[in-house]
Image: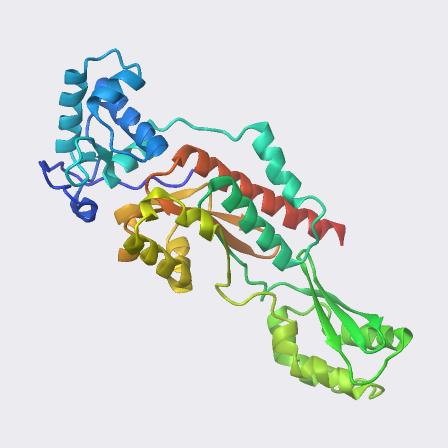
Length: 377
């Protein structure tokens, strides 16, 4: 399990502090408040109801809809106590209340029921990965699509760096008279294909000879070594096709780099913008600016310790001011030679239990796919 985020040491009276969401970050706790069973019950009910409806929760509707067996007056008093503890707040002049960031944190850490994906949901995700190639771009694109489709939020997949992966082989496949498909395979890793148009026609047998000569000089090296040493290593090759050799030397940076550092795949922009929190032009502009700023997104995902399980960052816990109204759920995934991160970004009002299970299962699925692909080679 990911480590829980600690609360601050002392609860301070906060009545009226949360007249606006930006004030939520002012709450300071070092350990959770000691809630009665009734307070825990009502806080959970408020969070669940607000996640479902996206509207502030009133005491009367809560007592009626949640079957609490409590009068509206009792519920109202408990909600007032929770507000004074900084766990609920009044948005603007609404009569209802919504969870604060601290309320969400207590709910996620202590009150939330674990929600496993159904067998149908798991099978739907697994089907998306069936039959796809070991092309890194396709794997990353499918992962982003799966996460965004299932969560209806913004899905982020950080492409792992394979600089320390070992080159297994290079294949050259003649596609047409002047076009050759370059296939680069890693040991225990994905493959990469690039279509190249040559100035002259090279028969298939000679292409195999060139590939064999290249493999004899480069196979077994790490990609970082290939890029640094390719010139001196293949300079002594027979000059039957010097243009093709020169192509490999000149294009080594592109050919033998499987991903740019901190490269991202993003899915679900439309789903994210359809959330009620971004219905007005100002909030919509803010989330669009955040989505377009790759550095912020990388920082949000990398700020999580996700060696195991799913890490959750809520609202004001995020380091960037533009992400104070958002929550980030992130996990690591692994191939035999590299690791990356994936996650979901959305409004703080999200179904944390479902999204946590979704992120965790998707990370395991992509790890299994990368592992199985390495065993096929």
